[in-house]
Image (cartoon, rainbow, N blue to C red; front, side, top):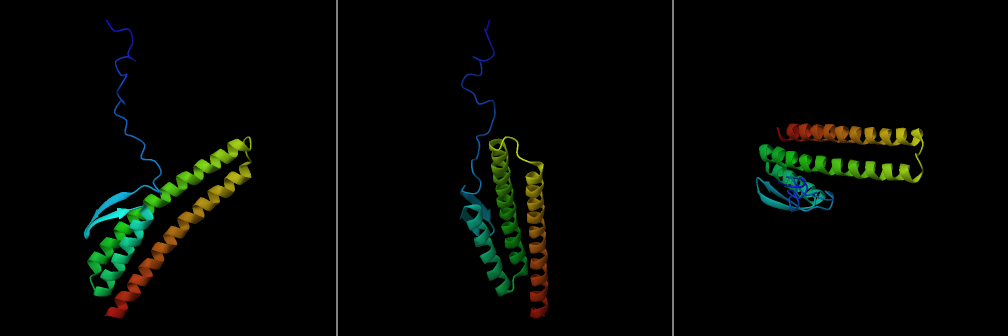
Length: 138
């Protein structure tokens, strides 16, 4: 008869995945349409944007859109990681200030909303540029 359940799970991690760590500095392997792209999220974003631009110049709209979508995926990953870091630092600041004020928290929430609106405005600008380029080519 076993004395406790703890000894049974002594050297097991209970099916928990390891913490991936800091996403901003983490190196990803992206298996995109042009082969593997390796680097931090910002490096991958830059590479896919450059590939999208080259495809656009060569007249291949389908691959250009594909590269844009890959770029946007990593941009979302980067944005989420930056938000998580900002929230963590804000919570640490509030603990250091013994609770902080609700006014500061409201300001940080407003900043996050502005960041999200910036992302949507960038998408709108991208669509406008894409439409203008399509009009120019026809």
